[in-house]
Length: 339
Image 1 (cartoon, rainbow, N blue to C red):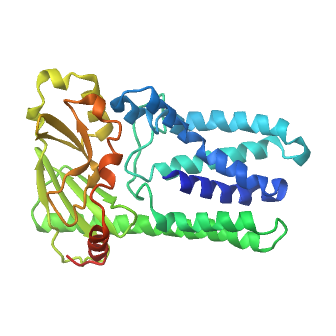
Image 2 (cartoon, rainbow, N blue to C red):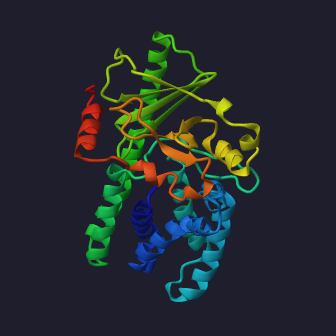
Image 3 (cartoon, rainbow, N blue to C red):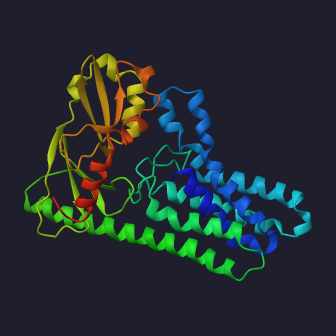
């Protein structure tokens, strides 16, 4: 998730776990603790773009890293905050819970996390929440602001703790139920439309959990489409087909380190495209630029194979490209089930 969400939720959880012992200091420590796994942003200054894709949310998002950090911070806090008489086990629980929540939330996005690093390089991604979803983040942010504002002795603090945690958790459960429903609808619709496929991916579109992006892989390419939770079960799924185009990659390009890293990162959901004087590596998991309106729209993730040094913003440059009032309006209409 985005940094604001981790800071806000970390602060609220910190208050819930240790507010009575630490006072408002629990807000600060919780916010810091839940932000620690994102120190991997430093790797971007030293690694090539393709290597950084796998370093990001890699080891710093593993259970091993979380355990080591929780134990280390617990030992330091036991020394720094002796006056509060918080036992070591309580500190371990405090920091461990914050980091575990961070790892779990990031696994809800499309990017994926390396929970088992360094023992396994498998990435876990459940495609339940968009990386920045204001409907999830609003409650923790508001709760954090109120907890920072009201008196440490105010009885309202308990309300805001529950508000921040319960409302965001309820929305997460709603998003999960929406994904399950959309996946079932899509599976049934593909069968009705006699579309054969090997793998099916459903992932939320930007900022919401009502409109979902669908990718169905067959032997030589991918069908893409969009389905809203407001769509009827009988509504057809409008699909567009993209050839994988692996044949565009020469043997020399296939052996390049960055291309191997890209294939590993994409988990096989990629296409190759010739555009001008370069080949593009498209990672389909991150969606299209307003694809619900333009089925042939370019993909968000575009890596310039012929210009490997021009990929510093490989995800961000397409994520919000061409967004305007019309784009938002068309997305809202599609979320409501209108086509």
